[in-house]
Image (tube, rainbow over all chains, first blue to last red; front, top):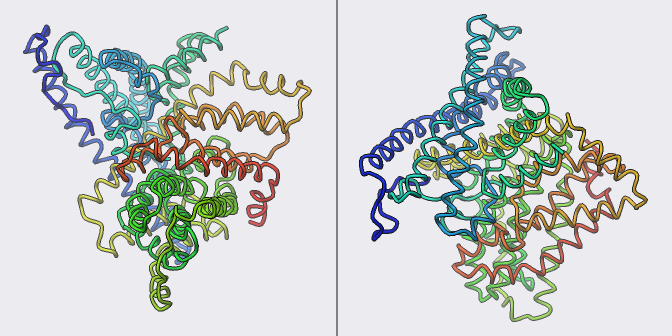
Length: 210
Length: 427
């Protein structure tokens, strides 16, 4: 997990960004991290639930020939959707989304920070759009009372809502991280540290997934 | 024209370090906007992300990731190496061979190559160094043995390929087994060759009494049970790969509890790490799906297939070029990224040339294994270097005999597809 630090990167350089602005950004970052920790815990719990529901379902089917009728729909409609969308922003904050960092090996710190600002701005545009369209769709489904037909009437909005929730949280994270990096570039202190580069000890500590 | 701009845009985004899934989503959406205006983008954004995520087959990924995390917590790898070392330790290079065997055994229950390399680094590497093994050779064996996880049935990489290629995931997982045995033997023969060339590289070990050897076999039990409840049920068709993966995760959970290694803190960390891994991989699949819409509409893939079909070149030359391309890409790009970026384009080509997608998946994963160990970013080498506290150049130096051996193994798999296809054909 990247940590929030309020130390000067270049101690001799006079800060050109006002102290109140930096304090505000750091405070917002802390608040957002608290929300992300909660979202990440919920995602972890969703994973825990999936493991047990599927495991018990299979056991009930083969041992007692009485599988849960609801588990397939419940998991694919709600639990895995919650798992993915709630984890989006915490994973970004923890630099968990893999990228190609070949260029970053060659760039100075300020150059890497310019890249981070670009990354945040471009992604915020995309996820902002996703938040908007998915929120509209969720609202439509809620008002129309859409359900997924089957042996149970699963309300569609309860699945759809995780898209604007997760994408919205990520959009906020991207906007805030972008501003923090920009403030640092303009001569402020470092609020969010740069992501670890592949091969560095920080990156290895995070371990990959292949 | 739009296609070229979008593809160049994608590479530009990847280069500045935008996460792979984000890059594909952003450039795909931009391309769709250019082709069909905002309504097309909105339409696809409304359906695509949710339809990718809301899939039961996708569950295999979080379950295998979780299984890997929990197996890691359980500490079962230490025992595996001890048992293997007791049995084969006396052969020249025996501890190296034990590392390869432990890598295969661990790989059968832990689908993450980096997790496997990290585990072997903390168990077999110190044992070899203590015995006076040449550090370069020891580090090389550990880095390469970790990659066996990618080929055995809990492999996360194979599942990602299966989802992208829309092949039968159960058959795909099973088809990696014989190639994994072949690769294990390749690693062991390479060690034997190295020791034969210079016996000082691997001083011999004192023998272990038979009673101890048999006692140590007991520790292999949990591994065999986990292997059985995942691979066994997939092979016999008792359960689907998704169900088997959940069983595997539960089994690993009980194993960690039974061995007294699962605390609240380590448990929460494992689940969070697996959840983030799931999110990362799924985000890439979501990005690939949005980019895929763009590619489908522009018919680029079909154009490429037609163009290659019109070439007067043997299909074996084309497959050789593709595999060489993969090995080069693998030296500087993440393996999951390579899979997602290339499979949707390369696979139609492979099918049109008359190759089997199952076979291609396994061969592709063996090239990915090579990618995990080639400089400059061979991830496993960095992991081993960190654990061994040695410069990574040392590990890269120790890896090159295995690199050459792996190329031979790939050539064998390409020449004899039956090695891959025989076992799944019996399911």
